[in-house]
Length: 331
Image: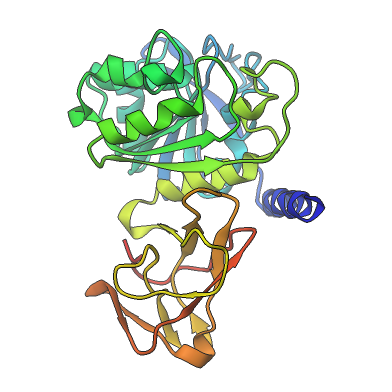
């Protein structure tokens, strides 16, 4: 337990160090269809995210880029972490028309990913039902299905998965909020007909109301993991690959048909590609180490799921590690 908590703290420290080394980006207030929203715009963004907070959705933006409502909301408090990753960021208000927001951010830089949390997932679904067409969607602590426990759900609002863009669900295994219970995730994933996948998180802290930002519902203590998953997902098929590793936490050779394909490596001492492996039932576990020196595995962009050479040994560790990407990702 102590080791696991230390790893989480170190992960957060790494995020903070990265932010400290990045130039500060100013929040500015802009008007989209009569709705006052906050924009953070890097000089050369590589994509855009639209953050839709939960609760009543009222961020109460002033004229100078200040936010006076929902300050503790998970998306509001991590907005600068997305900007530090080179993404243009728009924090919406409850009154913001999502279609207009998507068009506004598309003019800055595509792809445009909508990220909604808690009741913000309902507003995201309502916007998509009215015609908004983001390139991707991330739903955290979402009102996903009837089994989630709420009277409203993303499934009910959309009616059909046909309008659902490429979607990532991020959910805490211990979310005890009565309207976003973990039981609602699997029905949504099945309903999505292959358009959605899920990343489960655990750990962190539970403080106060289980439906507020200080609980597992608000990913208290796990901001770095949430931002990493959501920001990585914005990169699309050419971005970080997320695979599943075998459930047994032991060394295992990865062969054809296994859950985890061979890692891209060009030589015994060079690891190429961005790899973030997710355990199917224990999200904190990730495969991060490949003894390329003894197995000399290579990866072909033309057939990304085909490995040449000897099969690598998959080592499982209690925290994810991301390698610097070169070229295309395996998915």
